Image (cartoon, rainbow, N blue to C red; front, side):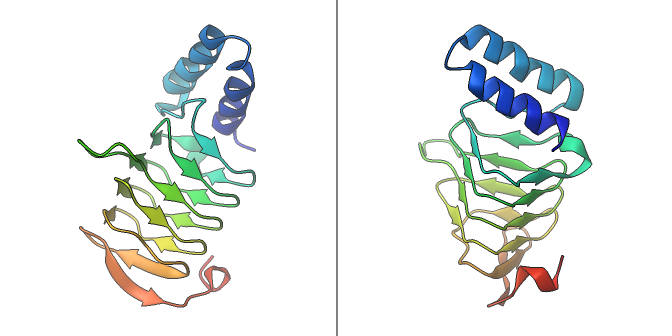
Length: 146
């Protein structure tokens, strides 16, 4: 497991005992990896951050499934005047530089191309790309691409 995720998981455990220590670890993650992965974000086991988690920003209420791969410089966050934030399924590949914004869900087994801006829901087993992201291919098997 990468160090950024280890720090996140330790921060999550400490948040039940001490909010201050949890915040210190979150800040340490920011200083070392220039990433914001708050303790309140739910990240499933088996999820990997490429390049050790450099420059990844995850909203504090975001939910990320298991066995996902998240590239560097990825933003998973909200939009103004919309309370809910993204929910990402299992086995999702998010390419470097992708932005996933707003009250949307990304289906399991999907691929988000690098530098895409996702503003709408993505069905499971789908490839999306572009600004804004549009469907490029449906009914894919992620194991064929990774």
